[in-house]
Length: 230
Image 1: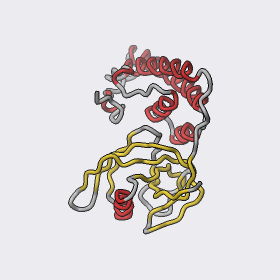
Image 2: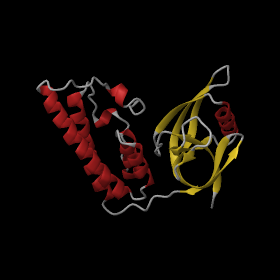
Image 3: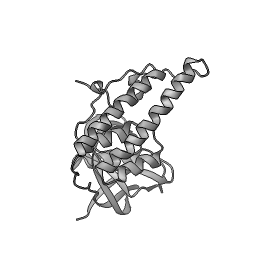
Image 4: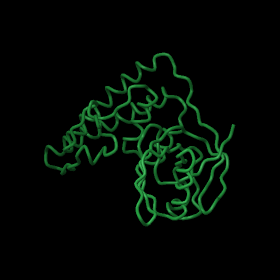
């Protein structure tokens, strides 16, 4: 069954379970968010494939994620800061414009049922992720262990977390969002993490010989929205 969802096209891919802070200042989106707050406090986020963020006439991807509004900090002039979190994915069937913002007719974009052995696959991915963080610390001031981050335990959420934190081109992030198999998503992420690990260790080796100067990132720079508050 289809449903309608106000749409916020952005140059970002929002994943289920992941936070997305937003500053709302355009009149059309202030109106849209105001209406959302009077309703179910949710809107759709979809990556822009054609057009420019903040300008009319943008074309979103066909698959996006619902953003649930958790907190609102309004300003006297009508602007507001939002703290949102991604929930479910949706598939856009069509769009229309209302008061200069898009409203999409959508249907839910579902994940396939989990396969046997998926928890074993997720455990392997967590080990690869730990090694990825270890190699990252060789090149930066970043020293992060899995326990310092709100790393999900269930396979589906883990796959979305990794897709969100990895530095990937937008089209690769969108590919991960649109995959319907947790197993296949984790396997692709294993490959991407292992490839990044090799690159980072080679980079560290060159830096040790003084050929290059390593960056000075910190955990807060790299993972500002994912550090554990526990």
